[in-house]
Image: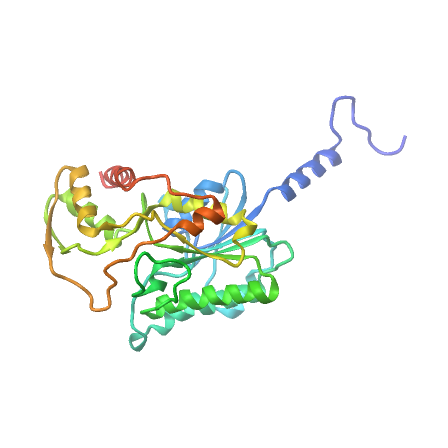
Length: 328
């Protein structure tokens, strides 16, 4: 006899190991830059059972944002040497949610925003292996449109009004250039105002909800601005569709509800759902503020076959319920 033979009905160890190896190969490996953030956390929660997932962020996840089976790495993408020493693994899919919202002017230190968004992206793509890469989803921002007229559509010339929005615009054009010249499989999703459970307290909507829940007077603007709110689960659905869509390569796509609402009507809706709240509407406006920032989403609907499913009223109820439990 040559070698070990398995008993009838018992799989050979090498066959079982081979099966596990094939299953590992068949499981897509997703890299999420910024997986410990608000949207990143929801994305990880949606895919971690079916995908191999690695998250890269500046720090570890908070207890509320920790997702089982996800591999968490800490890395500063603006550190060229650290990136070169840390990123050699192959990934089929990448979602770049890195960076942070900050409207600091260039003269006040805004260069760090360009570095955190555009330069960090270049550092990443210089070392990211491409042999297995099927799609790279870049997350952009409605701020890229600046003061462009509403409804904003992807064919408009961007009008960045801060180093942050400039970094986002530069990243989008850089990826489109790579797609045209090197066949790089990138798609840019330009998000409007994503909201939902788990959003940072300092953001506008959680501040309004907390103000209503406390039933104390709180200041807000007159609220005449038109804005476009998209529930986080709809945003995650759009990201997942973009990851699997070859038709999206090289495209910029607006991800939003497509429904304009005034800030005041949204605040009133929060007060109505909570059953209390005393907002003090005052005339507060920024000189560079676009009073009408809402999206034309027809391109995303056509290219991705995606459409938002959660109404503002339902999304606000889900968010408020989460906050009431979280702060009970």
